[in-house]
Length: 123
Ligand SMILES: [Zn+2]
Image (cartoon, rainbow, N blue to C red; front, side, top):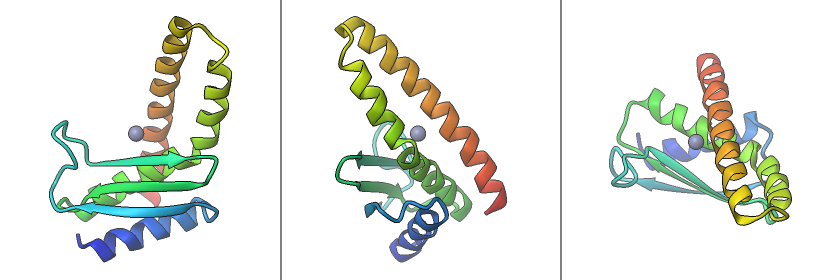
């Protein structure tokens, strides 16, 4: 997949998920993974300024690249929930905050994965 194709898919899913208020920078990696841990993509989000940076490995099957883009864009959808959660976590002790954050991260990932499967089937 080329960088313009990746950008087009990000724009397509930004529109489909009604994330028009976000400014999304797209960074493509010329490989099959974005890092040594084997991640295919990553999103960095700043909820308060509505800015995000999505990093996508380009050299994969088109359907796989699209699924990873859907996945990362869904993390944006849930970004507001994360911000609200973190606001609450700030009131906890460090130990309780770490446990709550780990639980939240697991739940977020599972939710994003399920929605990705559902949306990728209909794309
Ligand atoms: Zn994820």
